[in-house]
Every structure is written in C-alpha cells, then in structure tokens.
Image 1: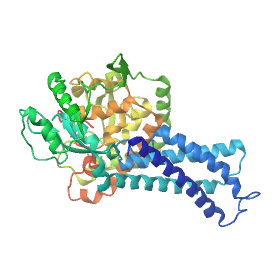
Image 2: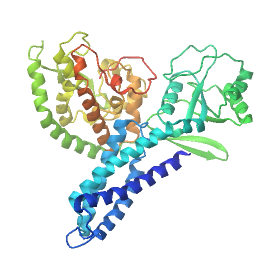
Image 3: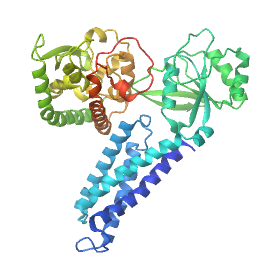
Image 4: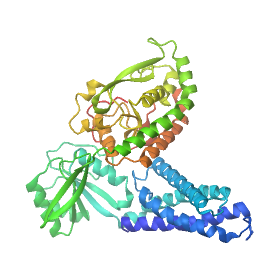
Length: 473
C-alpha cells in the first residue's frame, strides 16, 4: 500500500466517522425525534453535515492530519487533532451564523467531542495495522549505506514512520569504520569483499539501498549503484552535504541532468506579526495563570544565596545578548532539596521567562536561547537558529532534548521548525508542551526517592545523532 493511498483511506474513514458522529450528536440532543429541532426536522442538519465534510477535507489536507507528521507521536497527533476539530467546530458556528441556518450549539459540541475521539481511534488502529505482521511481511527490506550521524538519523526516521513500509535489514559501511550504535537492533556484523556485496543483498532479500554517506564517495557510490541496478534493487540517496537547513529543496531536470535547487526560507513579516500577537495574547493570559506557581517558588527559594530569582545572559535574535529570568535553582547540582527538584521537574523555574516574552526578547515557541560562550562555538548552519527570537519551548524540547544534549542536536530540530513556521505548528507545540508537563505530574512520587527525571526518559524519543557539547536548556 502506497503512502498516498493510505492517506486517502484515512480521509475516507474520517468522513465516514463524521457522518456517524453528526448522527450521534443529533440523537444525544433530540433523541429519536424526527422533528426535534424547533420549527424544523432532522433535515435541518443536512447542510451543516455537508459543510462539515467539505471543511474537514480542506482542514485535513491543509494541516496534514493523517498522523504521519512527526512520526506518529502521540502528543503530536493528539494536539493536531484537537486544533483541527476545534477549528472545524468554530467554522461551523460561523457558517451557520452567516447563513442564518439553525444549528444547535450543544449538538455541535457533542459532534466535536465524538469526532475527536473517533479520529484519534482511527489513527491508533492505522498505526497498529502498520505494525502488524502482515504489513511487515509486505514491507521493503532496506539497507542503509553509512555508519555515521546521517545514517543513524535516517534509520531513526524510517523506524518512526511505519507508513513508509520499510524494514531496516542492516547497515553497510567500510571495514575500517569504527563500531557505532544506531539505536535499533541489527544483524551481527559481517565482513565481505566489495564484489560480494550484491550476493549479501541477495541473501538478505534486500529491496532498496539508502545512501546516507557523510561525504560523497563518487567511485564507490557509482559502482554500488550499478551493481544494485543490475539486480533490480532500488537506490535512494540522501544528498550531500546533509546540513542544508533553512532551504526548500526542489528537484529540477535540465536535459536529463538532475539539479537540486535550494531556495532560501526568507523571513515573513506577516508571520512575524501574528507570532508577536500570539506571544502577547497567550503570554499575558499564561502569566496570570502562572503567578501563583511563581509566587510559591519564590517563597520556597527565599533562603537561596542571591535571592529567589536570577538573571542569566543569553543570546537572542541576531545573537543580541539579553538577561533571561528564571527561579534561582541550581540545575547542575547533583544534590538539591526535593522541593527544588519538583520546581525543575515541572519547569516552574522557567516561568519567569514569560516576562522576557512580553518584553519581546523571547517568544513562546522557538529555539531555546543559549549563553554567549556556547554560541561563539556555533558552526555556520547552527548560527542560523539565531535568525528568529528564542522561545520558552520548541520542537527540540517536545522531542525530549534538554541540558544533557548537544547544541547541534537541538539545532537540527530548531532549524526544521524554522523551515515551515505556522500558527498551527506553534499552537500544536504549545499543546504538546502541556502534554509533557502533565505527564511529569504523574512522575512526581518518584522524585521523593531522588530519581532524576528527564523528558527523554518519559517520552523515549529518537536516538540522537550527535553528542558534541552539553546543551543549555
């Protein structure tokens, strides 16, 4: 089954469930009465139902709500569906009001709740189906050529995207390459001559070879590709250099010559305005909600040397330094009181940064700011993350990257976020952050025993490709 066909089946299942959810909402509101609505009948709900089907098809395609996005991650799927269904219900209210069509508000709320639960169940069933033995038997058997960070990241992405219908058989690397851990089970290492590679592929029934080499090895690649083509084995190539972030690739063909065109993702003024508006609106609301927690943290830290609050120098947009607020709790200390561990564990220590958001020095969503002594060691592609305002949370944080992870690891996620910024993505990441914090609440009892908890331990994210420097936040 191809990925596009699977998307069509998921959309068809969504629309089918939409009809059932609308019918169930009518029954919950009016019961088994044909003339339940005042001054009308059940036929009054036909236009809103048709509008719902058309609108959901558009929302599904626009927001890509098939579940593939971010690798079937539960918090991501949950937050995307919440936003999509909420947007649909708001549009139905607006269309009904403008068209002066009577639609019961309670019935629409019932419809939204039932629709969300059904859509979540559909994606859960699809995910289980993709992991079934039947699908694994029909999946392509893939070998990844390479043993470095690019190969590891490629393996992690394929493993987290079962809709690609790929089963990783193993890795192929030169004999002088050192051993590496790829985070997934592989067969026992074998040593073969170059001429015996094709025989090895035939033995393991390999369907496709993915070139994920850190540097272009022209002679070796051409030889291997030629051998694979003769055996009918498909070949895919991760273009070198891989660190081509903040570019939108487009494959062109000029008289048979393939050209990978890299378009720059230029900053959008409209995007900057709505992002700043979202920061002010939600930042002000969250500030009032968080005041009791910050006040409690201040009381608990009154005895700290230097006071309960502290300011740390961080690099903001364009590398401009600013003072970032936080509660004065030692993150690098191995022995801290239980109440400080709880404050750190629930990220209450970071809530004072809402003041930085309101001042315009930070955003709610964006790359986490790092100190100048770390920024000065950035590579050129890492430095691109300084093109936008730093954030309190971001794509790297919801994927479990924290203090113990390198700046390079976090930069990969941050630059992916900068490639396709949108209001929908920002709201989705905020909801995923709430999900993560809620999950930590259930782990609070273990803190009393002195256990160190991190997001990575909670979420079990992808294996990481680099470990050069410890991160900041």
